[in-house]
Image (cartoon, rainbow, N blue to C red; front, side, top):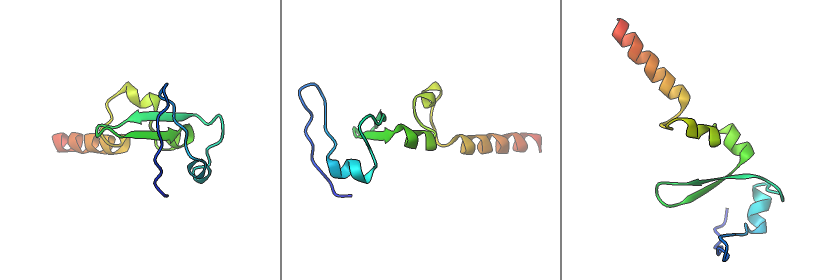
Length: 84
């Protein structure tokens, strides 16, 4: 994907260039999840991608430190070590 520079409007609005919208299959009305990243960058995820990756509003219910599967596996390993 080519890089494109955009400028925020006076009310904080931005327009995604049509080549980007076409490449990502974003149509009018597509809902995007906006995530502020620790490094100061911004991530836009279509809700369908957020659902596929298990992120979104539900992820705010608890701390996100890696995947839930990895956390569960680590917990099971700790339990097995304590038992054995």
